[in-house]
Length: 193
Image (cartoon, rainbow, N blue to C red; front, side, top):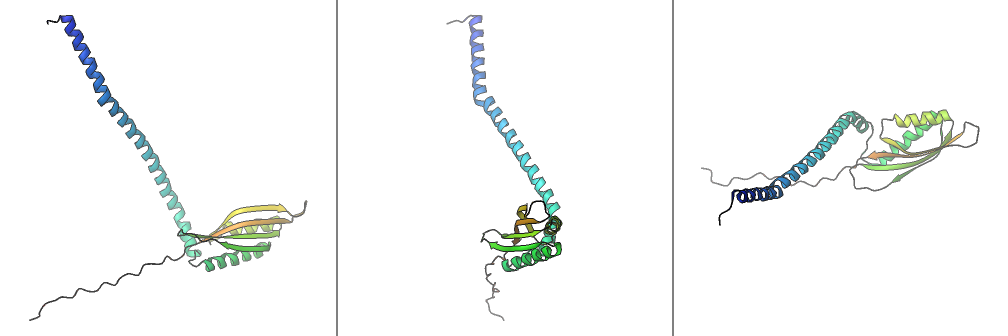
């Protein structure tokens, strides 16, 4: 069968179209999809890298404060940490002129490396006394944080306020270390002559 020039041209164009379709289906489209996936992965890694850089910058800003807290009072024994905060809060309230009506610790066991002890405190005093007391807590060198604060007037129209606080402190229990096996020196065997 002899094909005319026009038929050969149509067959060649059809073969080229089929080849382009196959090439697009099995090479170009998967390659473009892979490139888009890599671009998405790159953007995700860039965001993660920026987050890590921000975390490192935050670490450098907070490291001096952390060293100050550990040097000033991050205890290893929970009773020492509890006693430290109880004494400090009582001292601060006395200095500020705030009358503490209650101060109760609450320890909850935890598996983390830093443990937390919370305290419920209640007191009464003037606005000035409350402000000085809170200022002492916020500027303390010991690890203490105000978790909740409730402030209200005991009598309307007077400078007699009731304060309820939930405070917390941290302590870092000593982690038990596994006993290490002492290495015995190797003894040489042989005859000395």
